Image 1 (cartoon, one colour):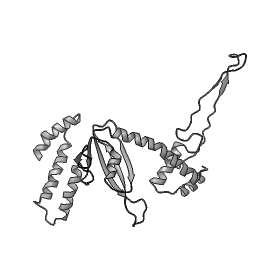
Image 2 (image 1 turned 180 degrees about the vertical axis):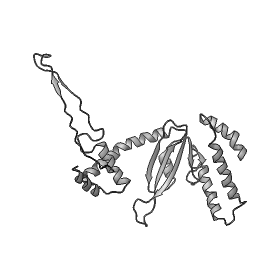
Image 3 (image 1 turned 180 degrees about the horizontal axis):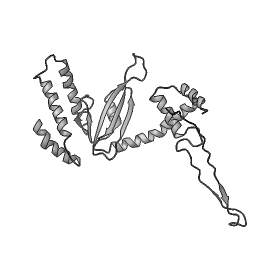
Amino acid sequence: MKQPELFCRNHYQQTYKCENCHPKGGDKIVAGKVPTSPIFPHSYFSSSVLAQIVTSKYLMAVPLNRQAIYFKHIGLPIDTKHMARAIIKLSEQLETVHNELTKILLKNPVIHMDETPFQVLEEKNRSKSYFWVMRTTEEFSNHQIVVFNYSSSRKQENISNLVGAYTGAIMCDGYNAYSSEMYPQITYGSCLVHIRRYFVEIVKSLKQGRGSYAVRAVELLNRIFKEEKKLEYQNAEEKALKRKLHLKKIC
């Protein structure tokens, strides 16, 4: 595995003046452009260094103090305070990107939404928190966007906080917080993959499942998924039409 390398790139800015342009003084000065860091100009934190710090901290769970020791070892003089401030400043900039992506996502007529539990701390007595995720559909979307939002709860209010006045359709699981009574302007679609899981769990619990409704449901959904993969279409309208023509026969 190749070890990371540090290098210093010096940019020299040349400045010129026209000595004959203004005989009485006030010569025009022309300076060349110098490339700067798009995030933190004139600092040790290049884009690659920031990416390394954030990845190590939040993906690999490496504390900043250990990272400081590592960076010192390879010759980069940054400490935990420097890194913490850089992460905060970076997150403020990324919040603007996050908000803009959310606006674009909510312009789509159909989106997916789900919530995933996780523990902020490793202690077992800590209550669960949640990542609420929204994404565009895999098909028929101009942009593939996935947006994550943190919440300490799974309360229904999270939905209205995230989607606002959205009036499209949300593909989701069977969680009762996705309620047409609470949000009548939204159309909710049930995910067949989630529905199939319940029948699969029933089949696993049966000693002799042959002939049961659960087994028949799993077999039917498997056939639906298999036949849908064979469909060829160019747009959402054509897909819906072919679903009615071909999949309705199976049901």
